[in-house]
Image (cartoon, rainbow, N blue to C red; front, side, top):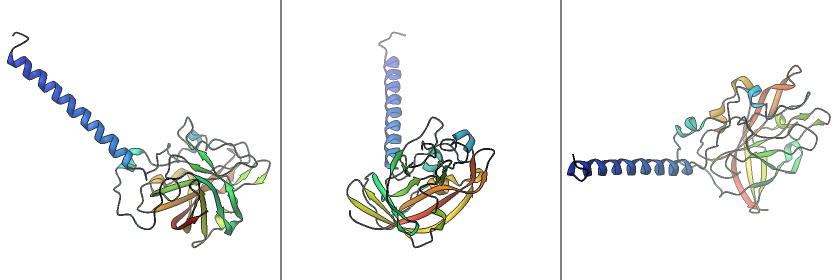
Length: 244
């Protein structure tokens, strides 16, 4: 058949049309992913702290918080209900205050992910600040904003979140943001989880309000590995905001 026959032109237009459909599908997927700004981008599973380097693996006698979040597939599969309560625009956190446990304007670092997909917090040495996980919403945005901190350090004793387990429902957590607003969160609950059974989807998954998770280590200390066996997660929700 000649290259200029009607049959050839029909096949050519069919191929072009199929290509355009593929491009349109890719655009829709990208738009959908970008629309999920309230869903944390997940590191690897917390059920495997050894593989993650335990955020990262600290030196003997130290602790480090859990870092895992659900996979993007698991997060995307969860529907987002109607928004409840106040929500703030995006603005990076600068410091955190938790008066009930003696934390006042502690500087917040920004922690991304390391080569294992875990939150790339530094080793548990003296003076290491707590950190906001940059893959989560900023404090006050819709979704679970995540702040992690060490419990103690090998040579320096207590670290920033040593007293985290003393918090009680109703206590306040205040996060000062780069836009000069202070986001005030009210503690809802505290939960202890074995690292081998860390509920990643529950901690990092989509929620219908501006939430906050404070995460550190707790429980029995395993001297063989140099890590605590459990994590503590403080759940809180945004109740108000005011100028800094």
